[in-house]
Image 1 (spheres, rainbow, N blue to C red):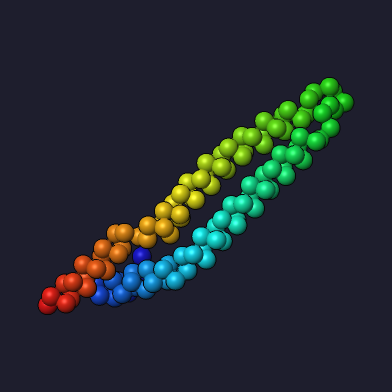
Image 2: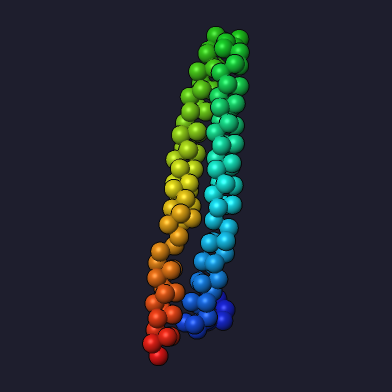
Length: 115
């Protein structure tokens, strides 16, 4: 935000470079995101099984297992909503390809060629 102000041409060129970067790495990034999501799901399945297998009763007779499951469910639900929003955002950006930025570059190129 603070610093040297870019000209319109410099800004459009930086946007074009970013688009070229995403175009080059799109498939690899989708694979990485898929692996990360699969590993997170596997981790939560492991965590659920671990909590489920804990000692069901403590010295006071309170069912600790149900409390842990409730806490794990609430944390998982909150984290899952954030994860789902991030997945949708990144997948949309990687698959559809930054439409407004592409339109900006195309418009600038058309104006430059028309001049």
